[in-house]
Amino acid sequence: MHGNASDLRLTPLPSPAMHRTRLPAAVLVTGLLAMAALATGCAQSKVPTDAQVTLTGQITRPDGAPAGNLRLALTRVPDLGELAFQGIPVAVTLGTACLADNPPPLCKLLQQATTDGQGTFAIHMNGSDVQGSFGTATTFDLAAQLPRSGSEVDGPSVRAGFEIQRTDVTVPTLRFWHPDHVTVGGDARTTTLDWAPITDVNDYTAHFSVNGQEIWSDQAAATMDSRAFEDANGVVHISAAASADGPDTTFKLFYTSQGVGFRGRAGAPESRGKPCVAEQQPCQLTDGSFDHPLPESAWAYVDLGGPQPVGTVFARANQAGSLTVETSDDARNWTTRATGDGQFAKITLPVGITARYVRVHGAAGSRITGLTQLSVWP
Image 1 (cartoon, rainbow, N blue to C red):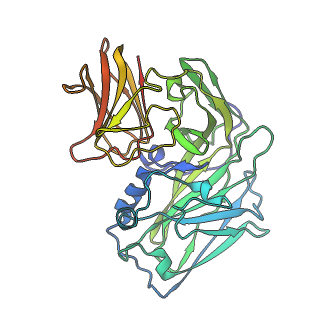
Image 2 (cartoon, rainbow, N blue to C red):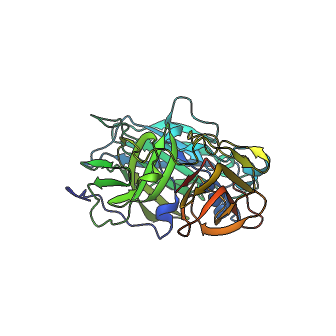
Image 3 (cartoon, rainbow, N blue to C red):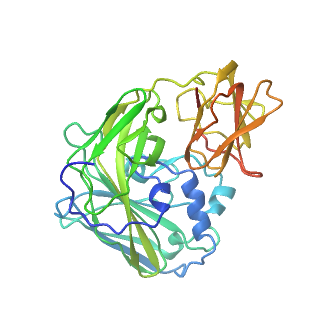
């Protein structure tokens, strides 16, 4: 990190929330939805069904000036009841995607508002709007984004996540973070990142998205493994997170930089275009498109066509928690090689392994639903 630090002051979120919440622009939510639902599913709503609820706050530009005439999107994160019984898809986009003129279906109870000349806003709802399918408290997501400027792919964005447990809620002032530079470069082995930091903030997350679909997210560092970016043509953002206590809730605040264009330089993995099978059905985890999330499955494997060196496996949009990587020469007898976890998991195998088939599965009883790509590298 180099350059002039922003004077934006943040209170960091406790680990690991800094690196588990997916951020704009157009963010892959998948496991976040289930985690948020689990986190709130046991708390009953304190808001009467027939009450009137008002949400207020202010949004400012990076220099502290009011962000007037700016569109906002307020979205309710679906709870477990909706995920299970209403057929809401797990792998979707959220965040600034809900600012679009035609937002995706998962923008539940979407309300779009516009700030006034002082950057303030007021959003009105019914008490029934802030309750989940079983009368539980639910999590809301408020997002805003500045227009892009110059060579930026998109402008900086800011987001707040919170529960509504009272009839009057004031969101802390949301101030955009617009670092004076975000640069990305490197070669086939190493991708380099550089950005102007926020004062006294040391932890950042790097996000790489393609056509609005996040395909990799990890703790941001000066250098990252280029294989995570493959040969994809996408957008890089840097984000930081913070928290603020409020009455009956904790606001989780996310600040995301402007987006810069970047094409991955590692090329395609050896698994690209090879046959993929998920529970005896063909799958699209090797097509390089990142936009065909796996239906509900317990396992999936890639057929490399013959014995090949297998050194590292990248699993993208993993919702299973822990993942196990196995190899086989006949797709019947499997040997466990390594384990890993994380929504975007890089799993390194012991040196010297060759195999034709590479399989991943979650812990006993879990599913790998939502997985978007399974990339195998020598």
